[in-house]
Image (tube, rainbow over all chains, first blue to last red; front, side):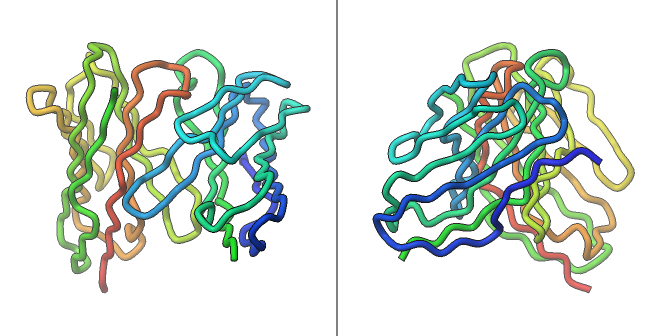
Amino acid sequence: DVKVTQSSRYLVKRTGEKVFLECVQDMDHENMFWYRQDPGLGLRLIYFSYDVKMKEKGDIPEGYSVSREKKERFSLILESASTNQTSMYLCASSLRSGLGANVLTFGAGSRLTVL
Amino acid sequence: AQKVTQAQTEISVVEKEDVTLDCVYETRDTTYYLFWYKQPPSGELVFLIRRNSFDEQNEISGRYSWNFQKSTSSFNFTITASQVVDSAVYFCALSINNAGNMLTFGGGTRLMVKP
């Protein structure tokens, strides 16, 4: 069964802490994505990557950075967490091209609370 | 810019009732893709269907059916004879390309099916 695995389901951090959210996929997908999910706002794209070491900003990149050193792993970094970054974070992956290129496979999410 | 509106934030039905989840989209592009995803309580979004803008045929998959109407910019989702396991948040999404990086999600509809 294909999988996108997010390392932490629940995290509680303090304002100003550096936070790492890790995501690993085992489908050999080229594309990987980080979304943020907030009630009533749906999912909003933070960053995506279409290849190792490549990254592109999404709709709401401010306050976040990403790292993709290996094809299967895509990390989201909050350099200095703030309370308005309390949210559910979803990682996803997809093929780069072909029929499946915009069909995303999601992880179970990481719920981050910043106090 | 693209926009997806799911006007129903929450719907509650009793098991075996039919329920329709509404989705209205906005885009100036003539080629686009529409999606529905299901997010059960476990948190992982599950892909249900993708439609491209040139295929207005309605689709049925078991108890699920989708009604795509370009004239009203709608892509509604109907569950027939609902079951408790259908309880989830459902997201409609729109993409103007096949790269996965331009998915716009609606705010989601929480469906609660009571026994």
